Length: 303
Image (cartoon, rainbow, N blue to C red; front, side, top):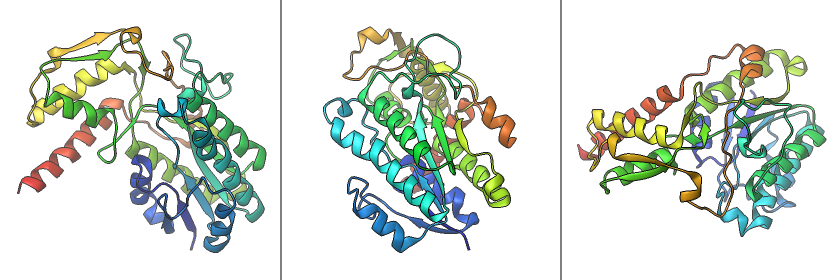
């Protein structure tokens, strides 16, 4: 039976991967205590013990602003560790699935970014993720690097859950309206990963390895995203202290943060759709599904 190692099992994507990949083989899912990616010498030793056929690596340093003051830690987890995993995979004939981000681009223009567009990260986080991609490519051709954007889910900490909380506490919200991208559910990322791994299990060395963009269909701003999810949450019956009309758009300059955000986070996912025949759901569908899950959890807790 195929043995699949999942890192970062407690994260948004790791949580969904445990569900989506369960039918494909024997899962070994580890948290930070099980596999500390900052301990470079210990990781290959653990891999030698586990002997995975496929390594799926959603573990990452994702505190974008904090990375500006912790560059060494971000580099260790996002840049060095993926290279260690990739070198082991190459030596043992394993597949590495690794996740990256729209932050590898500079966010200019309005055209969706393609996989072969030049990287130009503008933050410590973005640079560390780009260096991780480079380390994977240098170590093994047997990889899938999936760049995604604006990840959310019913599990973990994210923009959707933060907005739900604030919409139950405040009378109005001011949200950035000039950054454009596609909110992408962790469930969509995990389900797409499962389909790509199925292809690998069927085709082996003839699989279409490489870098792919993976984001939900459509686009919006953070402001439009917040308005939509609050409107939908109100329809479901979440206890809110404001409506979508009380969510106001502001420019990026009005909400300064330590790390620079891309103004254009659009990702062209045509290569993935053509190469794997995958239909990417709209970002609204993902939001609806996450809200439905959170609503069900709320009802269960109350009962």
